[in-house]
Amino acid sequence: MWYSLLLASVEEGAKAGESAGQAGAHHGSGPLFHLFGLEVTSEITTMWAIMAVIIVLAFLSTRNLKRVPSGLQNAMEMVLDGLHGIYSATLGEKKAWKYLPFLGSMFLFIIIANYSGLIPGAGMLPGFTPPTSNLSVTVGLAVIVFLMTHYSGMRQNGVGGYLKHFIEPVPFLLPINVLEEFVKPLSLSLRLYGNIYGEEMVLATMLVLIPMFLPISIMGLGLIFGFIQAFIFTLLTSLYISTATSGGH
Amino acid sequence: METGLIALGAAIAVALPAVFSALGQGRAAAAAMDATWRQPEAAGDIRTTLLIAMAFMEALTIFGLLIGFLLVGKF
Image (cartoon, rainbow over all chains, first blue to last red; front, top):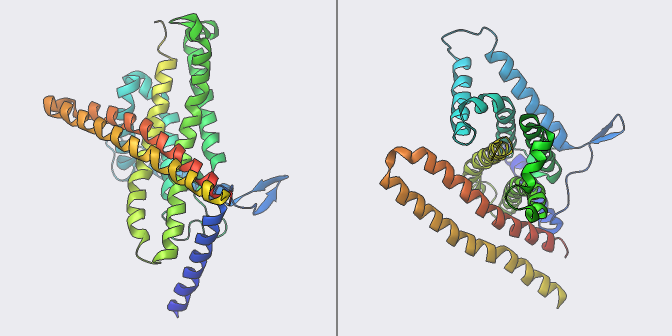
């Protein structure tokens, strides 16, 4: 009986692969339902599930804070210490602690979102698509990074002092500097979107070729690349924050 | 004729950035390995810098892949 279920899922995979091959760059799945007049797509419901996972994890690991941690608190402290070590290479020790809530939350969200594409049923079940495989989500994250870098630069150096650094080396570099400030979030968002969406496309195509066994190799690559993309996104964010708050050339 | 040209354009858009970025990333990896044997205690910093450099080169490849997707969607 499970064999007929298997055949049904193979057919679904074949249909998804065909439509994926024809759709090219379509965008996003259709809305599931409407809430307060806004459409709710399946990326949004998956984001709600990821938020619930992170909130439950945070709540469970800080319930009885102990001086010498053990169990879940220990694991989360190891993760946060590792992240702090990575970001202090670009930001320096003190600033890395200051920006760790922002950078750490983005890292956890992006890595869980990337890995949600590997759970069986992602992309096929209604209401479950990896959120970072949609350009709207990654552009939203990049807009948050853009606002954060300029806000922290202005808070550190004052509005005038921060705006002055655009004409710092030579004044006629102003258009290039301004253009670069817009290209940075664009490239961040396109990099993350292209990696995760490309992986989804390859998985859908491979499901058509050899249903059960061929996608395993791509899923292995997906494990590596999901972590690397989350790591790179937050590392570049910390680099941009560090150049924005460096202050006083 | 036109769909043939679109297909050819998509193929070149994916293949050309991939070839040149593979060459560039190979040079970056070779430089990182050289730096690591010269100074093994800086391996962590070298690894971080290597990953940042590779991300920039990889992004250009991904842009080519996205153009390929856009072109294939025009069929």
